Amino acid sequence: MNCKLLLSLICLFVVSGLNAQECIDRLATPETKALFKNLYRLSGKKILFGHQDDPAYGVGWKYETGRSDIRDLTGEFPAVYGFDLGGIERGQDHNLDGVPFAKTRQFIREAYSRGGVITLSWHLNNPLSGGTAWDNKPGAVASILPGGEKNMLYTQWLDRVADFLGELKGSKGESIPVVLRLFHELNGGWFWWGKNQCSPEEIRRLWQFTIHYLKDQKKIHHLLFAFNTDRFSSAAEWMERYPGDEWIDIVGFDIYQANDIKENAAFTAFFEKDLRMLDSIAMDHRKIPALTEFGYNEVPDSNWWTNIFLPVIEKHNVVYALAWRNAGAHENGKAEFYTPYKGQGSSADFKKMYRSGKIIFEKSLQTENMYK
Ligand code: BMA
Image (cartoon, rainbow, N blue to C red; front, side, top):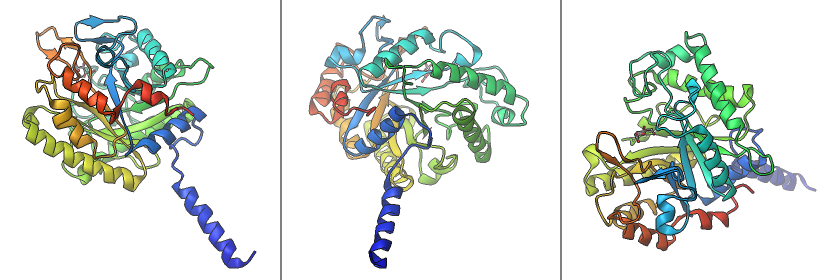
């Protein structure tokens, strides 16, 4: 073989090696590596519909086996399921919204056996004050970093998260892969890990400590790590608190049609711009883009799905979109839901979006074999 040929073969090998996208955990289980590869492959081709707490409850019902507001409308469960761990850190048997962790575990097993994708968020209490996740007095992030007065407490909390994750097993005893979405909406000021409560350096160190602890100390190898901001105004804002490419698999943002973007036009403009910026962030960093939370509470526009949501999102690369929870009526009398339910004003339009085939649910996802 001549030198030139050998050199080009070496180059080809190096370049193709660089192009092969893998999750950050080199020791990830085969199913987890496959999930990463498949989400990466589907980005820009399909959009998986997700829903928080989907099989647990919906508007007007709770814990009815096999029920889901999405399934009531379409005959299918969503493709992605979100659940929240808030409360697990204190050894509670139910999360901050009252869902027992034993049920969450069961829902996760069932969702996985249907080929669904699982993502977990964690509205953990403020470790310094003992208040809720929304107790946003500064200082909590610094207090749980190594050397901080609450670092020991925080590692105990992580141990409880690790125990829960360790119990998630499929039918062959394999660990069920989970997209773990920590410290979400960190460019906002409402959570104790938010932008006014710690420096970019501190929150980056917290990310790194947490991921290192779960992966290398606790030896949990069935996680993909998602980093997401709330809606954002520039790529620089999104990047400010990003811990680095060696820590993150999935990049995203949350957006709600509310407050100053409650009108369709204002929401559309923001949504479009953020999706476009996320496309290029994901491309530059070779990560998977996702819409990690979205919603228009009570969906008061009966054509919202095909007039507002779909025309914008379908032009972008986010591989999944997770609608927030259908809590129904709160004690204060206010309603909270982000997808329609049978009979709700936007349900016909939701079904129209479903029939378009551009957003996929459980059954089409099954043909994608996400874990192989
Ligand atoms: C919020 C609301 C709250 C809930 C919290 C965590 O957006 O839905 O009611 O407690 O998420 O799930």
